[in-house]
Length: 434
Image 1 (cartoon, helix red, strand yellow):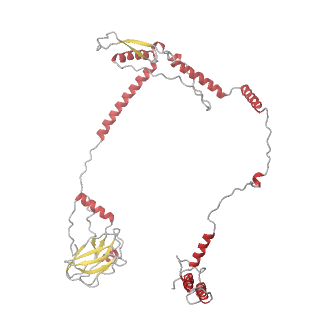
Image 2 (image 1 turned 180 degrees about the vertical axis):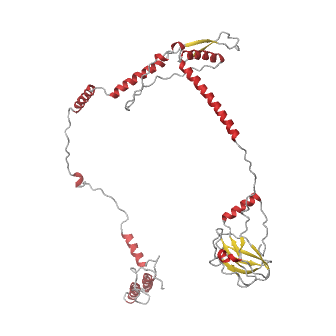
Image 3 (image 1 turned 180 degrees about the horizontal axis):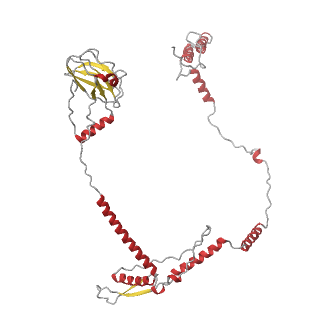
């Protein structure tokens, strides 16, 4: 496959018709040489000025043809220099004495006549509106507002009664200098002026449509004067409150006694329930038991000869002694291909290097000598971890092995098991497999 050519700028391409020179370069070179020859042959100039002038003209033609500056030809530099010299560099703004026609064109605007009696008409309309509103009958909402205002005034009048001052003799014996000291106790209501409950008439609640409530400011509350709390004040307050309680409705005392009796009954029932629950509780004795050794389960199993084809998937048992055969699977007992197996002897020298096929099987081609060997497994993708398998070959038929890999979950489970129960030493397997 041929490489695609790189795009080029063809608009500025110049044909080189005379050797390696374009027509423009050749014209500059030939023009400089021709002008120098004419000065040498035609113009009678002294040699002191003639030869330097001829050299400058010829070298100028060569420079125009072959000497670019910053990748720009010398002729473009000369043209840009001449334009910058000849063009003006300062621009002055001059104001015209006469304004433009569009600004001096006359125009007329139509003014609307202003009513002379506009304010008087507005005042008369307001008076007519107020007279009309006053002639309308009062609405239901206004009636409700009047009733509410009257009820609120009556309620506030109850709290606006003068508060009497009761003089209580001091019973404190710790002040011998003032044996007849009295203390003023200001109560919210006097016992003599407390109205009985039968004399207060409360209007029944009236359900009416929602309306905008009229907010009536409450009288400013005056903070009560600070009174030192003493035993005499407590006794005086208790005596006054007792008088107040005696003048209240007797139904309140009955209700209070009923609530206290119900409270005592509930407390007795709660105690009975607690005792019943304590008697029904049975003590559960938990005997410690050893957890199953999950982390130290053997990841290598021997497969019986009659179930080799069904379990492992190997077509047949090896017919030659000392032929190592097996299969590698993941924790879910699925085959693992491309697992590298290294067989090392007792000295740690690798003697075979294998790789599982697409069915997870591995087998050596030539038998090994008798002795102890170690099978090391490695996952190239670093997904699983395997334990080393030690085998003993003694010139007998090798039973295929099934090796299970360990995932991250199994590794964490094994670490927790070792941390809790300690490391247990598993017993070695028999028949050539440890």
